[in-house]
Image (cartoon, rainbow, N blue to C red; front, side, top):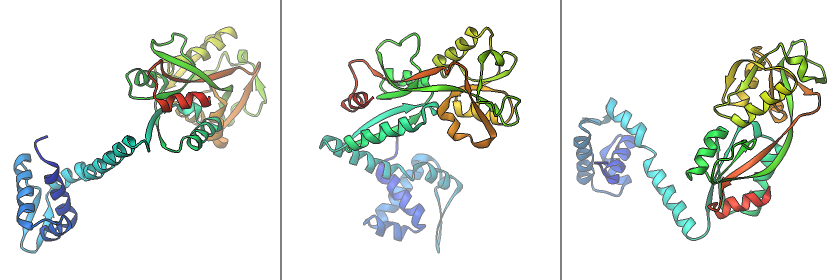
Length: 291
């Protein structure tokens, strides 16, 4: 970066005050050095950021674009400094946790609430990320852990898994479908249906599990559409594109556009929490103990 934070601060002040005089007063800085900082910034960028007129200042198109990009930089630096200071003083730890929409249920909310009650000094940062991407992010340290859904059949090296929640799989059909309103349906009865599925690229363990259930029922599901997100799959069902097998928790998000039906035999899945083996943070270890 060729320009300094002071130059950016001066630019932001002038952009928000639309006055060099008011900007200088706001920064407790004499106007000549403030003007020099802005002029130096313009020279470095090779663009005029302000139109200077006798009665005031206005931003150029380049200035408006630059302002949109940099206006939050000072506040982010202040927050970063505060976080680092609190962390050094033992006040705050940040826990970066991934999750998937399929586990957005009361069990997850209850787990996070209990963690906050027991560890008020830990900030939980949640990231809605597909299971496959979560595992990659955990492996390279971008996430401290994740609620990844099903445990993958081929465990990635260096990752450990803990069971934390078990729930039923349900059949989702559009309102008005011939199966809508039934209490239970056998998997065999779905052999001729068009399926919408969670993609194997984003959630290979879940996709494989659903296909295996269908194979055990004697048929191969005819999948016509896929999505990386379970919620998107349910929305496509609501739109009448096909049927889907999804976790029960998704039902509470769909309303009357989708009919949710039990499956014979009540197949269930076990959700797991994943983190690095032997390299977990104290906060991620504390989360594991709650599960």
